Length: 245
Image 1 (spheres, rainbow, N blue to C red):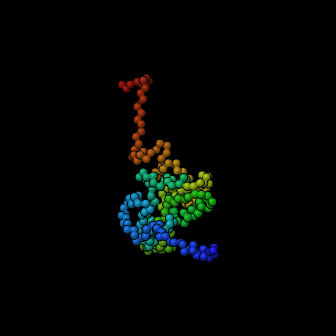
Image 2: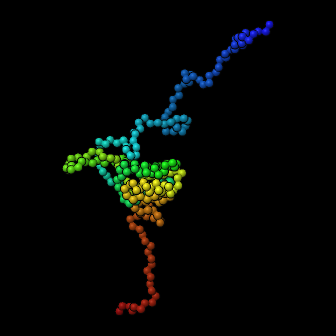
Image 3: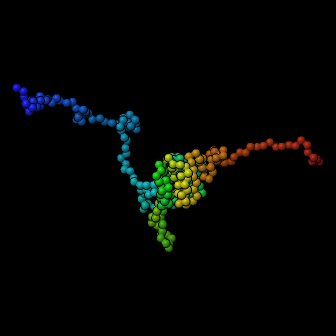
């Protein structure tokens, strides 16, 4: 007699057996604890190890740093590299830059913010990256009107930065035409005080107000006096002037 469907299904379930499956990975209790010695070369030898610092990051931007405003600082003067330094006068990260060439001065954070917004508004929709080469880490303190001398330095007013002569402030790198970047830097230079120029990565560095072009090197500027080539004296074979008696 042929068994019905229910009895066949019941017998099939009874025939199933659960075999002990092997674990895909050993349990955490069976693994011995591994001690890793943190060394400067640990990231190079042990994979998937990220070195970190326990010091909390100090929040802040390039326009408003995390500095105590109550600690008043001196006004100071911008750095003028008269000793033979070309630091900050060339384009480093980008392809094009905006450089000031007339005179050193102090620029406020509000003016730099307006210049940055002008560049971003002109390059809207383009693929680029904007680099800021300065940071507003100088506090400006202002006294009230008709304040007599000897009443203190005043209260905090705004943040500013010291920009030296021939220092690059903005840099741009991206898939943008050069004429478009020139126009963006022209509009930004109109918003900033002073006179600005458009520079590229291939432009020569500047020492003070002297550009290292036309055969001028940094070693020549460091010399106190430049030796000129001495030409031999010219003697004429025949002279109409009689010798002195």
